[in-house]
Length: 108
Image (cartoon, rainbow, N blue to C red; front, side, top):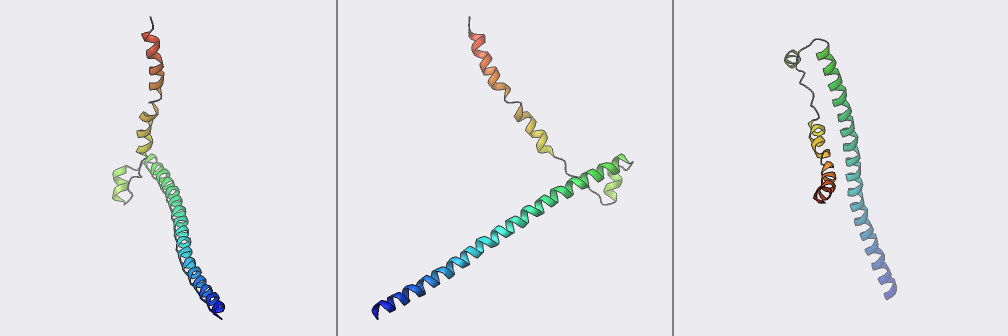
């Protein structure tokens, strides 16, 4: 009987451990679902911002001024200054060619 009670204790302990693991796994699953929803919404927001920017630009090209649009509650779309800021960083690859030119200049 001692073995049966040891088996019963083990079984109950394993059941309790599995329940705890299921609860923890559920928390991770919920986090993954929320992240997926966030990513989908972020993508939809990027698309909506792009559409708004196109429509806003069309309104300006159609004769509306930015001041008039602002008075109508239409704010100017966000520009993408980060793309402009990255351009100088891309100019840095010329530095290795300058380094390569230096030894040639130093040769007699």
